Image 1 (cartoon, rainbow, N blue to C red):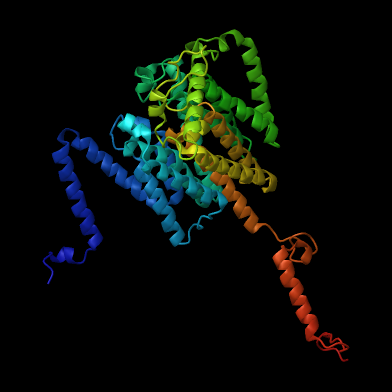
Image 2: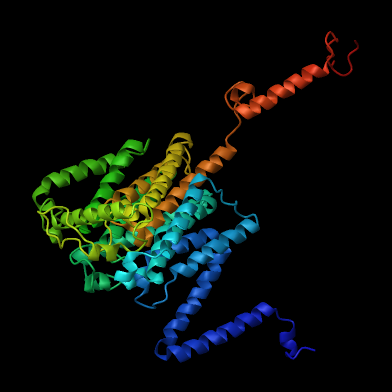
Length: 529
Protein backbone atom coordinates (compact mmCIF):
# COMPACT_ATOMS: atom_id res chain seq x y z
CA UNK A 1 0.00 0.00 0.00
CA UNK A 2 1.25 3.46 -0.88
CA UNK A 3 1.65 5.94 1.95
CA UNK A 4 1.25 8.85 -0.48
CA UNK A 5 -2.08 10.64 -0.76
CA UNK A 6 -4.27 9.55 -3.62
CA UNK A 7 -3.47 12.65 -5.67
CA UNK A 8 0.24 11.88 -5.59
CA UNK A 9 -0.08 8.18 -6.17
CA UNK A 10 -0.42 8.59 -9.95
CA UNK A 11 2.37 11.12 -10.38
CA UNK A 12 5.65 10.08 -11.89
CA UNK A 13 8.64 9.45 -9.73
CA UNK A 14 10.54 12.05 -11.74
CA UNK A 15 8.24 14.84 -10.55
CA UNK A 16 8.66 13.74 -6.95
CA UNK A 17 12.44 13.61 -7.27
CA UNK A 18 12.54 17.05 -8.89
CA UNK A 19 10.33 18.48 -6.17
CA UNK A 20 12.44 17.03 -3.38
CA UNK A 21 15.58 18.25 -5.11
CA UNK A 22 14.17 21.78 -5.38
CA UNK A 23 13.34 21.84 -1.67
CA UNK A 24 16.84 20.67 -0.79
CA UNK A 25 18.42 23.36 -3.00
CA UNK A 26 16.28 26.12 -1.51
CA UNK A 27 17.03 25.05 2.07
CA UNK A 28 20.73 24.67 1.28
CA UNK A 29 20.97 28.17 -0.16
CA UNK A 30 19.00 29.65 2.70
CA UNK A 31 21.44 28.13 5.21
CA UNK A 32 24.71 28.60 3.31
CA UNK A 33 24.18 32.10 1.85
CA UNK A 34 21.13 33.80 3.38
CA UNK A 35 22.21 37.27 2.20
CA UNK A 36 22.34 36.15 -1.47
CA UNK A 37 19.46 33.69 -1.37
CA UNK A 38 17.14 35.78 -3.55
CA UNK A 39 19.68 36.35 -6.33
CA UNK A 40 20.89 32.76 -6.26
CA UNK A 41 17.38 31.32 -6.38
CA UNK A 42 16.46 33.61 -9.26
CA UNK A 43 19.60 32.58 -11.11
CA UNK A 44 18.89 28.91 -10.53
CA UNK A 45 15.32 29.32 -11.74
CA UNK A 46 16.35 31.12 -14.91
CA UNK A 47 19.17 28.64 -15.41
CA UNK A 48 16.82 25.68 -15.09
CA UNK A 49 14.49 27.12 -17.74
CA UNK A 50 17.39 27.87 -20.11
CA UNK A 51 18.86 24.41 -19.51
CA UNK A 52 15.50 22.80 -20.38
CA UNK A 53 15.22 24.86 -23.57
CA UNK A 54 18.76 23.87 -24.55
CA UNK A 55 18.00 20.18 -24.03
CA UNK A 56 15.09 20.43 -26.45
CA UNK A 57 17.08 21.75 -29.44
CA UNK A 58 20.81 21.23 -30.09
CA UNK A 59 20.97 24.29 -32.37
CA UNK A 60 19.64 26.52 -29.60
CA UNK A 61 21.98 24.75 -27.16
CA UNK A 62 25.01 25.56 -29.33
CA UNK A 63 23.96 29.20 -29.68
CA UNK A 64 23.40 29.44 -25.91
CA UNK A 65 26.90 28.07 -25.29
CA UNK A 66 28.33 30.78 -27.56
CA UNK A 67 26.27 33.45 -25.78
CA UNK A 68 27.30 32.15 -22.37
CA UNK A 69 30.96 32.34 -23.35
CA UNK A 70 30.38 35.85 -24.71
CA UNK A 71 28.84 37.06 -21.45
CA UNK A 72 30.85 34.97 -18.98
CA UNK A 73 32.75 37.93 -17.53
CA UNK A 74 29.65 40.16 -17.41
CA UNK A 75 27.66 37.43 -15.70
CA UNK A 76 29.90 37.69 -12.65
CA UNK A 77 28.32 41.08 -11.96
CA UNK A 78 25.19 39.20 -10.87
CA UNK A 79 26.17 35.75 -9.66
CA UNK A 80 29.44 33.91 -9.27
CA UNK A 81 28.13 30.62 -10.70
CA UNK A 82 28.81 30.65 -14.44
CA UNK A 83 26.34 29.40 -17.04
CA UNK A 84 28.90 28.22 -19.60
CA UNK A 85 29.73 24.83 -18.08
CA UNK A 86 26.14 23.58 -17.48
CA UNK A 87 25.07 24.82 -20.91
CA UNK A 88 28.01 22.98 -22.43
CA UNK A 89 26.76 19.73 -20.89
CA UNK A 90 23.23 20.57 -22.03
CA UNK A 91 24.53 20.97 -25.59
CA UNK A 92 26.17 17.54 -25.53
CA UNK A 93 23.04 15.90 -24.07
CA UNK A 94 20.80 17.72 -26.57
CA UNK A 95 22.85 16.40 -29.49
CA UNK A 96 22.74 12.87 -28.06
CA UNK A 97 18.93 13.09 -27.68
CA UNK A 98 18.53 14.48 -31.21
CA UNK A 99 20.67 11.68 -32.64
CA UNK A 100 18.69 9.12 -30.66
CA UNK A 101 15.45 10.51 -32.11
CA UNK A 102 17.07 10.61 -35.57
CA UNK A 103 16.41 14.33 -35.76
CA UNK A 104 20.14 14.96 -36.35
CA UNK A 105 22.91 12.93 -37.91
CA UNK A 106 25.49 11.19 -35.79
CA UNK A 107 28.66 13.33 -36.02
CA UNK A 108 31.28 11.72 -38.22
CA UNK A 109 34.60 11.05 -36.55
CA UNK A 110 37.50 11.26 -38.96
CA UNK A 111 41.20 11.89 -38.76
CA UNK A 112 40.82 15.37 -37.28
CA UNK A 113 38.53 14.18 -34.51
CA UNK A 114 40.96 11.40 -33.58
CA UNK A 115 43.81 13.91 -33.52
CA UNK A 116 41.68 16.08 -31.21
CA UNK A 117 41.08 13.11 -28.93
CA UNK A 118 44.78 12.26 -28.82
CA UNK A 119 45.65 15.88 -28.07
CA UNK A 120 43.15 15.93 -25.20
CA UNK A 121 44.54 12.69 -23.78
CA UNK A 122 48.06 14.12 -23.98
CA UNK A 123 46.92 17.14 -21.97
CA UNK A 124 45.32 14.93 -19.33
CA UNK A 125 48.56 12.95 -19.05
CA UNK A 126 50.45 16.24 -18.67
CA UNK A 127 48.08 17.32 -15.91
CA UNK A 128 48.56 14.06 -14.02
CA UNK A 129 52.32 13.85 -14.31
CA UNK A 130 54.41 15.50 -11.56
CA UNK A 131 56.37 18.56 -12.64
CA UNK A 132 59.16 20.58 -11.05
CA UNK A 133 57.07 23.77 -11.17
CA UNK A 134 54.48 22.24 -8.82
CA UNK A 135 57.02 22.20 -6.01
CA UNK A 136 58.19 25.73 -6.76
CA UNK A 137 54.69 27.16 -6.92
CA UNK A 138 51.93 24.72 -5.86
CA UNK A 139 49.20 27.20 -6.81
CA UNK A 140 49.95 26.89 -10.52
CA UNK A 141 49.51 23.15 -10.33
CA UNK A 142 46.08 23.39 -8.72
CA UNK A 143 43.61 21.07 -10.40
CA UNK A 144 40.99 23.81 -10.89
CA UNK A 145 43.33 26.03 -12.89
CA UNK A 146 44.67 23.15 -14.97
CA UNK A 147 41.11 21.98 -15.65
CA UNK A 148 40.26 25.47 -16.87
CA UNK A 149 43.15 25.37 -19.33
CA UNK A 150 41.99 22.00 -20.66
CA UNK A 151 38.30 22.94 -20.78
CA UNK A 152 38.71 26.40 -22.35
CA UNK A 153 41.52 25.57 -24.75
CA UNK A 154 40.58 22.06 -25.84
CA UNK A 155 37.31 20.49 -24.72
CA UNK A 156 35.06 23.48 -25.43
CA UNK A 157 36.26 24.36 -28.96
CA UNK A 158 36.74 20.74 -30.08
CA UNK A 159 33.32 19.55 -28.92
CA UNK A 160 31.70 22.68 -30.40
CA UNK A 161 33.42 21.86 -33.72
CA UNK A 162 31.90 18.37 -33.74
CA UNK A 163 28.46 19.62 -32.67
CA UNK A 164 28.48 22.38 -35.31
CA UNK A 165 29.21 19.80 -38.01
CA UNK A 166 26.05 17.96 -37.07
CA UNK A 167 23.51 20.61 -36.07
CA UNK A 168 24.29 23.60 -38.31
CA UNK A 169 23.05 21.60 -41.26
CA UNK A 170 20.28 23.79 -42.65
CA UNK A 171 20.10 27.33 -43.94
CA UNK A 172 17.76 28.31 -41.11
CA UNK A 173 20.13 26.99 -38.43
CA UNK A 174 23.12 28.73 -40.04
CA UNK A 175 21.21 32.01 -40.31
CA UNK A 176 20.27 31.85 -36.63
CA UNK A 177 23.90 31.36 -35.71
CA UNK A 178 25.20 34.11 -38.02
CA UNK A 179 22.67 36.65 -36.77
CA UNK A 180 23.68 35.76 -33.21
CA UNK A 181 27.27 36.65 -34.13
CA UNK A 182 26.09 39.92 -35.69
CA UNK A 183 24.20 40.75 -32.51
CA UNK A 184 27.21 40.06 -30.28
CA UNK A 185 29.62 42.07 -32.43
CA UNK A 186 27.15 44.95 -32.76
CA UNK A 187 26.81 45.17 -28.98
CA UNK A 188 30.59 45.03 -28.59
CA UNK A 189 30.95 47.82 -31.14
CA UNK A 190 28.32 49.86 -29.30
CA UNK A 191 29.95 49.66 -25.87
CA UNK A 192 33.41 50.19 -27.39
CA UNK A 193 32.47 53.39 -29.18
CA UNK A 194 30.35 54.77 -26.32
CA UNK A 195 33.23 54.03 -23.93
CA UNK A 196 35.18 56.80 -25.69
CA UNK A 197 32.66 59.04 -27.45
CA UNK A 198 29.31 58.89 -25.74
CA UNK A 199 27.44 59.09 -22.46
CA UNK A 200 29.18 56.47 -20.36
CA UNK A 201 26.01 55.81 -18.40
CA UNK A 202 24.80 53.88 -21.45
CA UNK A 203 27.67 51.40 -21.14
CA UNK A 204 27.02 48.06 -19.49
CA UNK A 205 28.70 46.22 -17.81
CA UNK A 206 30.07 49.08 -15.76
CA UNK A 207 33.59 47.66 -15.46
CA UNK A 208 34.14 48.65 -19.09
CA UNK A 209 34.32 52.30 -18.03
CA UNK A 210 34.86 52.05 -14.27
CA UNK A 211 37.52 49.36 -14.00
CA UNK A 212 38.84 48.17 -17.36
CA UNK A 213 41.77 45.78 -17.23
CA UNK A 214 43.42 47.84 -19.99
CA UNK A 215 42.99 51.57 -19.45
CA UNK A 216 42.29 53.60 -22.58
CA UNK A 217 41.46 50.59 -24.75
CA UNK A 218 38.14 49.14 -25.89
CA UNK A 219 37.83 45.97 -23.82
CA UNK A 220 34.21 45.00 -24.49
CA UNK A 221 32.29 42.52 -22.36
CA UNK A 222 35.39 40.35 -22.14
CA UNK A 223 37.36 43.12 -20.39
CA UNK A 224 40.08 42.02 -22.80
CA UNK A 225 40.94 43.99 -25.98
CA UNK A 226 42.33 41.02 -27.94
CA UNK A 227 39.17 38.90 -27.71
CA UNK A 228 37.02 41.99 -28.22
CA UNK A 229 38.97 42.76 -31.39
CA UNK A 230 38.59 39.17 -32.63
CA UNK A 231 34.81 39.26 -32.18
CA UNK A 232 34.56 42.62 -33.92
CA UNK A 233 36.59 41.36 -36.90
CA UNK A 234 34.49 38.19 -37.12
CA UNK A 235 31.26 40.17 -36.92
CA UNK A 236 32.57 42.50 -39.62
CA UNK A 237 33.07 39.56 -42.01
CA UNK A 238 29.66 38.05 -41.21
CA UNK A 239 27.92 41.38 -41.84
CA UNK A 240 29.50 41.62 -45.30
CA UNK A 241 28.58 38.01 -46.03
CA UNK A 242 24.92 38.47 -45.10
CA UNK A 243 24.69 41.82 -46.89
CA UNK A 244 25.94 40.37 -50.17
CA UNK A 245 23.67 37.32 -50.26
CA UNK A 246 21.22 37.30 -53.18
CA UNK A 247 17.69 38.03 -52.04
CA UNK A 248 18.68 40.03 -48.95
CA UNK A 249 16.16 42.79 -48.36
CA UNK A 250 17.54 46.22 -49.34
CA UNK A 251 16.89 47.71 -45.89
CA UNK A 252 18.57 44.77 -44.16
CA UNK A 253 21.50 45.03 -46.56
CA UNK A 254 22.11 48.71 -45.81
CA UNK A 255 21.66 48.07 -42.10
CA UNK A 256 24.42 45.46 -42.24
CA UNK A 257 26.69 47.78 -44.20
CA UNK A 258 25.99 50.50 -41.63
CA UNK A 259 26.95 48.15 -38.78
CA UNK A 260 30.36 47.53 -40.35
CA UNK A 261 31.33 51.22 -39.93
CA UNK A 262 31.26 51.40 -36.10
CA UNK A 263 32.57 47.82 -35.98
CA UNK A 264 35.69 48.75 -37.95
CA UNK A 265 36.16 51.88 -35.84
CA UNK A 266 35.73 49.90 -32.62
CA UNK A 267 38.55 47.60 -33.75
CA UNK A 268 40.78 50.68 -33.95
CA UNK A 269 39.63 51.75 -30.48
CA UNK A 270 41.01 48.54 -29.00
CA UNK A 271 44.46 50.06 -29.75
CA UNK A 272 45.62 46.47 -30.04
CA UNK A 273 47.91 45.30 -32.81
CA UNK A 274 46.43 41.81 -32.98
CA UNK A 275 42.93 43.28 -33.38
CA UNK A 276 44.09 45.50 -36.24
CA UNK A 277 45.85 42.47 -37.71
CA UNK A 278 42.55 40.58 -37.57
CA UNK A 279 40.82 43.27 -39.61
CA UNK A 280 43.64 43.44 -42.14
CA UNK A 281 43.62 39.64 -42.51
CA UNK A 282 39.84 39.66 -43.01
CA UNK A 283 40.06 42.33 -45.71
CA UNK A 284 42.94 40.67 -47.56
CA UNK A 285 41.43 37.18 -47.49
CA UNK A 286 38.06 38.55 -48.58
CA UNK A 287 39.60 40.52 -51.43
CA UNK A 288 41.35 37.37 -52.67
CA UNK A 289 38.79 34.60 -52.02
CA UNK A 290 35.36 36.26 -51.98
CA UNK A 291 34.50 35.50 -55.59
CA UNK A 292 31.51 37.58 -56.62
CA UNK A 293 31.31 39.58 -53.38
CA UNK A 294 34.83 40.97 -52.91
CA UNK A 295 33.86 44.58 -53.72
CA UNK A 296 33.17 45.68 -50.09
CA UNK A 297 36.49 44.18 -48.97
CA UNK A 298 38.36 46.10 -51.67
CA UNK A 299 36.53 49.33 -50.78
CA UNK A 300 37.45 48.96 -47.11
CA UNK A 301 41.06 48.14 -48.02
CA UNK A 302 41.35 51.34 -50.05
CA UNK A 303 39.63 53.41 -47.36
CA UNK A 304 41.81 51.85 -44.66
CA UNK A 305 45.00 52.52 -46.59
CA UNK A 306 43.96 56.15 -47.04
CA UNK A 307 43.18 56.44 -43.31
CA UNK A 308 46.57 54.97 -42.35
CA UNK A 309 48.37 57.37 -44.70
CA UNK A 310 46.49 60.36 -43.28
CA UNK A 311 47.15 59.40 -39.63
CA UNK A 312 50.53 57.68 -39.93
CA UNK A 313 52.37 59.79 -37.29
CA UNK A 314 49.71 59.09 -34.68
CA UNK A 315 49.11 55.46 -35.67
CA UNK A 316 52.78 54.47 -35.57
CA UNK A 317 53.60 56.39 -32.42
CA UNK A 318 54.41 54.67 -29.13
CA UNK A 319 51.40 56.22 -27.31
CA UNK A 320 49.00 53.28 -27.03
CA UNK A 321 46.29 55.36 -25.33
CA UNK A 322 45.97 57.55 -28.43
CA UNK A 323 45.98 54.64 -30.85
CA UNK A 324 49.70 54.25 -31.47
CA UNK A 325 50.99 50.77 -32.26
CA UNK A 326 54.70 51.57 -32.17
CA UNK A 327 55.28 50.82 -28.48
CA UNK A 328 58.28 48.54 -27.98
CA UNK A 329 57.56 47.39 -24.41
CA UNK A 330 55.12 44.69 -25.53
CA UNK A 331 57.62 43.53 -28.14
CA UNK A 332 60.29 43.19 -25.44
CA UNK A 333 57.82 41.24 -23.30
CA UNK A 334 57.20 38.78 -26.09
CA UNK A 335 60.87 38.41 -26.97
CA UNK A 336 61.73 37.50 -23.38
CA UNK A 337 58.78 35.11 -23.22
CA UNK A 338 59.93 33.50 -26.47
CA UNK A 339 63.45 33.04 -25.07
CA UNK A 340 62.02 31.44 -21.93
CA UNK A 341 59.79 29.20 -24.05
CA UNK A 342 62.72 27.99 -26.14
CA UNK A 343 64.59 27.22 -22.92
CA UNK A 344 61.65 25.17 -21.62
CA UNK A 345 61.39 23.26 -24.90
CA UNK A 346 65.12 22.47 -24.85
CA UNK A 347 64.97 21.24 -21.25
CA UNK A 348 61.69 19.31 -21.54
CA UNK A 349 61.23 18.36 -25.22
CA UNK A 350 58.91 15.37 -24.73
CA UNK A 351 56.49 16.02 -21.87
CA UNK A 352 57.05 19.75 -21.46
CA UNK A 353 56.90 21.65 -18.20
CA UNK A 354 53.24 20.70 -17.65
CA UNK A 355 49.97 22.23 -18.80
CA UNK A 356 49.17 25.49 -17.03
CA UNK A 357 52.67 25.72 -15.54
CA UNK A 358 54.24 28.32 -17.83
CA UNK A 359 53.51 31.25 -15.51
CA UNK A 360 55.45 29.57 -12.70
CA UNK A 361 58.29 28.57 -15.05
CA UNK A 362 58.40 32.11 -16.43
CA UNK A 363 58.71 33.39 -12.86
CA UNK A 364 61.51 31.15 -11.59
CA UNK A 365 63.31 30.27 -14.85
CA UNK A 366 62.78 33.51 -16.74
CA UNK A 367 65.54 34.69 -19.11
CA UNK A 368 66.01 37.68 -21.40
CA UNK A 369 66.18 37.56 -25.18
CA UNK A 370 69.38 39.62 -25.20
CA UNK A 371 71.41 41.88 -22.96
CA UNK A 372 69.86 44.93 -24.61
CA UNK A 373 66.40 44.03 -23.29
CA UNK A 374 65.38 44.57 -19.66
CA UNK A 375 65.33 41.18 -17.93
CA UNK A 376 62.10 42.04 -16.07
CA UNK A 377 60.08 42.50 -19.27
CA UNK A 378 57.52 39.68 -19.59
CA UNK A 379 58.48 37.94 -16.36
CA UNK A 380 55.83 36.05 -14.39
CA UNK A 381 53.06 36.05 -17.02
CA UNK A 382 51.57 33.39 -19.28
CA UNK A 383 52.86 32.70 -22.76
CA UNK A 384 51.90 35.20 -25.43
CA UNK A 385 52.36 32.88 -28.38
CA UNK A 386 49.87 30.06 -28.78
CA UNK A 387 52.11 27.45 -30.39
CA UNK A 388 55.18 28.27 -28.30
CA UNK A 389 53.11 28.07 -25.13
CA UNK A 390 51.80 24.65 -26.17
CA UNK A 391 55.30 23.43 -27.05
CA UNK A 392 56.68 24.64 -23.71
CA UNK A 393 53.91 23.08 -21.61
CA UNK A 394 53.12 19.93 -23.60
CA UNK A 395 56.43 19.26 -25.34
CA UNK A 396 57.00 18.67 -29.03
CA UNK A 397 54.37 15.89 -29.28
CA UNK A 398 51.74 18.28 -27.98
CA UNK A 399 52.49 21.09 -30.41
CA UNK A 400 52.77 18.62 -33.32
CA UNK A 401 49.29 17.32 -32.51
CA UNK A 402 47.90 20.86 -32.29
CA UNK A 403 49.45 21.94 -35.59
CA UNK A 404 48.23 18.71 -37.23
CA UNK A 405 44.67 19.58 -36.15
CA UNK A 406 44.95 23.05 -37.66
CA UNK A 407 46.48 21.73 -40.88
CA UNK A 408 43.72 19.12 -41.18
CA UNK A 409 40.98 21.70 -40.69
CA UNK A 410 42.56 24.08 -43.19
CA UNK A 411 42.80 21.25 -45.72
CA UNK A 412 39.07 20.54 -45.37
CA UNK A 413 38.31 24.26 -45.65
CA UNK A 414 40.41 24.33 -48.82
CA UNK A 415 38.40 21.40 -50.19
CA UNK A 416 35.20 23.25 -49.28
CA UNK A 417 36.41 26.29 -51.22
CA UNK A 418 37.06 24.06 -54.23
CA UNK A 419 34.05 21.75 -54.10
CA UNK A 420 31.07 23.63 -52.67
CA UNK A 421 28.87 25.43 -55.20
CA UNK A 422 29.22 29.21 -55.28
CA UNK A 423 25.57 30.03 -55.90
CA UNK A 424 24.03 28.80 -52.65
CA UNK A 425 23.85 30.21 -49.13
CA UNK A 426 25.62 27.18 -47.67
CA UNK A 427 28.16 26.96 -50.45
CA UNK A 428 31.54 28.39 -51.32
CA UNK A 429 30.92 31.91 -49.91
CA UNK A 430 30.26 30.39 -46.48
CA UNK A 431 33.54 28.48 -46.83
CA UNK A 432 35.28 31.84 -47.39
CA UNK A 433 33.84 33.08 -44.10
CA UNK A 434 34.96 29.98 -42.19
CA UNK A 435 38.45 30.09 -43.72
CA UNK A 436 38.85 33.78 -42.92
CA UNK A 437 37.86 33.30 -39.30
CA UNK A 438 40.24 30.36 -38.80
CA UNK A 439 43.06 32.48 -40.26
CA UNK A 440 42.12 35.20 -37.74
CA UNK A 441 42.48 32.59 -34.98
CA UNK A 442 45.97 31.62 -36.13
CA UNK A 443 47.03 35.26 -36.60
CA UNK A 444 45.97 36.18 -33.06
CA UNK A 445 47.66 33.07 -31.70
CA UNK A 446 50.98 34.53 -32.82
CA UNK A 447 50.67 37.33 -30.25
CA UNK A 448 48.49 35.86 -27.47
CA UNK A 449 48.05 32.44 -25.88
CA UNK A 450 44.38 31.91 -26.68
CA UNK A 451 43.92 28.69 -24.69
CA UNK A 452 42.73 30.47 -21.56
CA UNK A 453 40.36 32.75 -23.53
CA UNK A 454 37.43 30.41 -24.15
CA UNK A 455 35.50 32.62 -26.58
CA UNK A 456 38.56 33.23 -28.76
CA UNK A 457 38.90 29.51 -29.46
CA UNK A 458 35.23 28.55 -29.37
CA UNK A 459 33.84 30.81 -32.11
CA UNK A 460 36.38 30.02 -34.89
CA UNK A 461 36.01 26.28 -34.32
CA UNK A 462 32.22 26.56 -34.57
CA UNK A 463 32.63 28.28 -37.94
CA UNK A 464 35.09 25.62 -39.08
CA UNK A 465 32.78 22.79 -38.01
CA UNK A 466 29.84 24.46 -39.75
CA UNK A 467 31.72 24.63 -43.08
CA UNK A 468 33.18 21.11 -42.82
CA UNK A 469 29.68 19.79 -42.12
CA UNK A 470 28.41 21.44 -45.32
CA UNK A 471 31.25 19.80 -47.25
CA UNK A 472 30.43 16.33 -45.89
CA UNK A 473 26.74 16.66 -46.71
CA UNK A 474 27.46 18.03 -50.17
CA UNK A 475 29.67 15.05 -50.94
CA UNK A 476 26.89 12.71 -49.78
CA UNK A 477 24.24 14.32 -51.98
CA UNK A 478 26.41 15.09 -55.02
CA UNK A 479 24.87 13.49 -58.14
CA UNK A 480 26.62 10.39 -59.46
CA UNK A 481 28.84 11.10 -62.49
CA UNK A 482 27.85 9.95 -65.95
CA UNK A 483 28.90 6.51 -67.13
CA UNK A 484 32.39 6.42 -68.49
CA UNK A 485 33.68 9.32 -66.34
CA UNK A 486 35.91 9.01 -63.26
CA UNK A 487 33.88 7.84 -60.29
CA UNK A 488 30.98 6.58 -62.42
CA UNK A 489 31.13 2.97 -61.25
CA UNK A 490 33.08 1.70 -64.28
CA UNK A 491 36.64 0.41 -64.01
CA UNK A 492 38.19 3.77 -64.87
CA UNK A 493 36.50 5.44 -61.92
CA UNK A 494 36.82 2.65 -59.38
CA UNK A 495 39.19 2.30 -56.50
CA UNK A 496 41.85 -0.43 -56.95
CA UNK A 497 39.93 -2.83 -54.67
CA UNK A 498 36.67 -2.25 -56.57
CA UNK A 499 38.44 -2.72 -59.89
CA UNK A 500 39.76 -6.13 -58.82
CA UNK A 501 36.30 -7.19 -57.66
CA UNK A 502 34.73 -6.01 -60.95
CA UNK A 503 37.32 -7.87 -63.03
CA UNK A 504 36.78 -11.07 -61.04
CA UNK A 505 33.04 -10.78 -61.62
CA UNK A 506 33.53 -10.36 -65.35
CA UNK A 507 35.81 -13.42 -65.48
CA UNK A 508 33.24 -15.50 -63.57
CA UNK A 509 30.57 -14.55 -66.09
CA UNK A 510 32.78 -15.57 -69.00
CA UNK A 511 33.56 -18.94 -67.39
CA UNK A 512 29.85 -19.64 -66.92
CA UNK A 513 29.22 -19.53 -70.72
CA UNK A 514 30.61 -22.58 -72.66
CA UNK A 515 33.00 -21.78 -75.46
CA UNK A 516 31.15 -21.75 -78.78
CA UNK A 517 27.70 -21.59 -77.22
CA UNK A 518 25.30 -19.34 -79.13
CA UNK A 519 24.51 -16.01 -77.61
CA UNK A 520 20.91 -15.75 -76.40
CA UNK A 521 19.29 -12.40 -76.89
CA UNK A 522 15.96 -11.21 -75.59
CA UNK A 523 13.34 -10.25 -78.14
CA UNK A 524 10.70 -7.68 -77.45
CA UNK A 525 7.58 -9.27 -76.04
CA UNK A 526 4.89 -10.04 -78.60
CA UNK A 527 7.16 -10.30 -81.65
CA UNK A 528 7.49 -13.63 -83.47
CA UNK A 529 10.93 -15.06 -84.10
